[in-house]
Image (cartoon, rainbow, N blue to C red; front, side, top):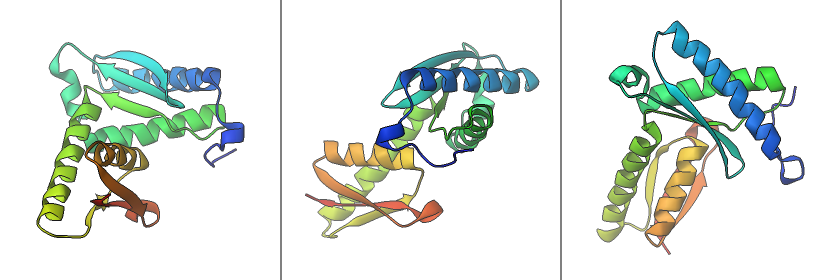
Length: 164
């Protein structure tokens, strides 16, 4: 079983990513049924990743939409996909708009870093976070005209922001 991320030469095809989304949706539907939570699933392929969103018209998703819970469910879903397909998954899961909530939190962290830079710091370090969150931070920092780099290994990997 391949547990390494794909390189450019063996990047998953759109069909592979659609299959990832289908496997993930089946897994998540099972979890939602067990938890007796209503939710509508939407599948998408963007930027070389499968995206699965779970939405609901009622408040039933509130119990699983906290960013830490979504992160844990995403990891479980990735493992289920990997078990079924035999390939490493970089699937992104969004539950009840949790990704938008997390992006706003990351924007607040970047704004706090900007304040430190304006107070004279040469750089500002952010807490450790997932690769997806670091990518969002890099995008947010670039939008604000800043330079960002990731440092550290594994769960200690974090982003450092400085002026360009």
